[in-house]
Image (cartoon, rainbow, N blue to C red):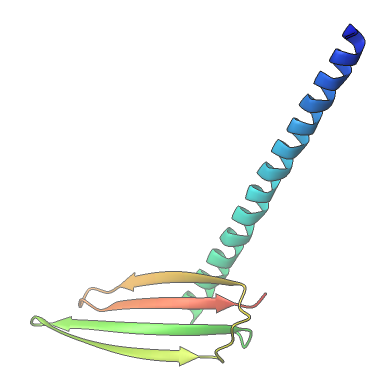
Length: 107
């Protein structure tokens, strides 16, 4: 086998491997940016208590007092299987109340 053919094949395999590697890395970067966007948007909505109509929110209140626990579930929006992403946020208050927000995004 000639040396130039072997070199060409080796360079082709190396370039193809690098292209696949960079494609996979770019997909991780895009995915992590989307998750960060949804997380920041969910935190902003929880802090302002302002929820869009494009989302579905389940809020679970857990109250603990004198070794007794009670809970309450509040739902905002319509349930639909077409949600793209979901984020869970937790808030713990001084009186022992835990509030869990599970927010489903469409876009």
